[in-house]
Image (spheres, rainbow, N blue to C red):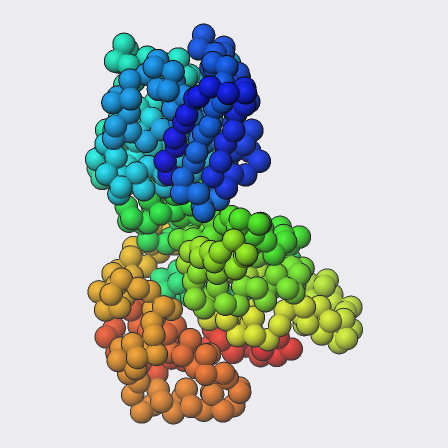
Length: 496
């Protein structure tokens, strides 16, 4: 993006061109007033500001500071040569203060790729910008400081990047307040969660209210593998664009997003005239959790079908085609009926029609995208008290060690991809079944009328189970466990 300015004789007018949004056009009033308040009022005459390329839509207030600097150069207050190799971004207040903006991190990454050596940013965004190496960050608090620095009359601190590869920064990743050891019982559910996190398999949990489904889901990010520097930069860039990046510069924990059932389709997948990322993209690299799954609008659930398969979101508008990353682990939780206690007829008073109507809000094609489905039953008080006494619950750290080993095996075999992301050819190459395994999966395919998608999902899940055990071969036992996660115990045949 390049900004040009011209001040010439003529009727007093401040004109801006370049396919600008309303907030960009409003910059002329902010810039005019800010310049006046720092003692450099604009001269009378025709002022023209051009933002190029002209066919690219410009949005936001990030151009204010650069426009003001361009005008100060035209007024011979700042030397033109001083801004070479500089990228300048920031919003201006009427008193000349430079305010923080969204999306600084991806802008600085792009500036580095384009060969800029310096980037002048608002002071509020200094920590965010400092995570990019090989580019010098110059934070400023107001327009007067920016002009003084560019003229060489004052020195501002130059930040050359954060040392993020040391051990102290990596310790933050494992500092999780929610630990699996806090969940008493649910050994089968914990095992399923471990398999889902190890292979990035979409998971659906069914059980009565208060059984612990949400507790299990909230602890999944703590057992997922640590993020690489590339992942941290990518996820931090997404959060920066969305304005949710916290102080400190980089995202240090995998995202966990749990939107309300009333979420709209644009808020989930991204939308707007010029689309911005939605919850699905914000959860990229982490967990997207849908609690009370049938309470979500059916159209919202069905909109997830393609992104869950392709792990990206495509949004088409008149202004162009947009593609957002959406590689997250989807976890859903639901009650088996509206009261939540089916099939326990001692507590459940729902009729068959009520149950079918409740579950009918979830379409078959959406359920077909679930790799695993587990039952999370209500725990007895005796079992919980016994486990509290024994203190036998496995911690998130121990589970994470198992997952890390399994993920390392997957990445070496699948070129850096999880088992759930394997192609058909990779499944045929790396998931060879013996005769007993072939008979088992073929019989299950016929008996339970599985789709071809589920056929491959079961084999991929079995591959993850084998990796957790360090086994090169997929045994009949691994395949049987994977089948159990798909077809369940038969309690919820109305669902599958």
